[in-house]
Length: 270
Ligand SMILES: CCCCCCCCCCCCCCCC(=O)OC[C@@H](O)COP(=O)(O)O
Image (cartoon, rainbow, N blue to C red):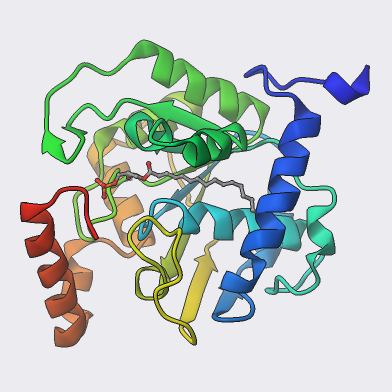
C-alpha cells in the first residue's frame, strides 16, 4: 500500500511528508517574516539530477541551517525564483533529501529524534564528542549510510563538522567525494547565527537579513585529484578558507571570539 511506502532507511514516506509540511509551516516566518532570507541560485537546484548530489555548506546553527535548505530546495523545485514565498511548495516536498548530523545532537531530545526522521544520517564524529576532543575510529556503518543516502537522493553536509567558523574541513568529506563521485554543490549561508541561538531553535533577533547562496557544482577530477586539493577547493567554495578571515570585520571577529571564550567554560553553549 502506497501509504506505507518506505525509503531505504525504513522511514515511512507518508510520515516524513507530514513532518516536513508541519515543520515547514511552523518555521516559515523565521525566514520570511521576522527575518528575510535572501536567496541566490535556485536555478542551480532545478538543474541537478535526482540522486547522488552532495551539498557542502558552512555551518552556523545546529538546526536552522538545514531547515532553511529544506525550504529553499523545495521552493526552487516548485519553480520559485530565489524566493520561498507561498508555502504551497511544501505540499509535495522532495522526500529524498538527507543531512549528515552528529549522533549525539540528534539523540538529545524528543524533538531532535523527531527531526531525525526527516532525513538524518546520524554519525559519530571521530574527533569530537559532547564538546570534548576525542579520538575514535570511523564507523563503517556511518559511511555506508551516507552512501545509501547518496544513492537514494541528495545529502547535505557541513564538512567542518562544527558550528565554529574557520575550522579546518574534515578529510572524510573528500574521501566520500572521491569514492562515490557525487555532484558537489557548495552552499554559503550567513546571518543565521545573528538571528538564531546556537541551536537554531530560538529566534534571537528579528529583522536580520539572512542569506543563502547556492553555487554551481564544483569541477572535480574524481580519479586524479588529491584529498588535499579537493579540501582546498571546498574551503574556498564555502568561503571558509583562512584567506577569507582577512576580510571579516573586527566587530564580527570580536563576536566570534567572545562566543568561543564562553564555550571554553560551558561546552553546552548559549
Ligand atoms: C521545511 C522544513 C523541513 C524541516 C525538516 C527537518 C530538518 C531537521 C533539521 C535538523 C538538522 C540537524 C543538522 C545537525 C548538524 C549537527 O550535527 O550540528 C551539531 C554539530 O555540528 C555540533 O556542533 P558543535 O557543538 O558546534 O561542535
